[in-house]
Amino acid sequence: MDKLDLKGKWNELKGKIKQQYADWTDDDLAYEEGKDDELLGKLQQKLGKTREEVVTWLKDLG
Image 1 (cartoon, rainbow, N blue to C red):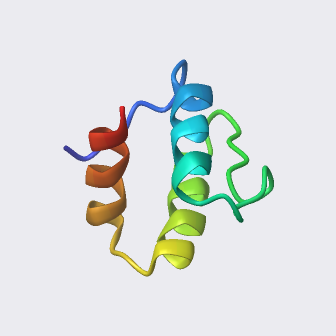
Image 2: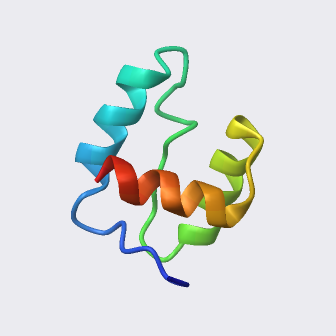
């Protein structure tokens, strides 16, 4: 469970995240193809969780 496949379903996940965290902006959730680690780092900072916890959280949302 090393790699998270965000491509293709990120818009759906982003909508679910915004429902939970209404104060998060599009900049907080900006995803660029090939920059998964950068996005995960931003989410780690916002949530105060480890990378593994963030990946698990995203998978549970999806």
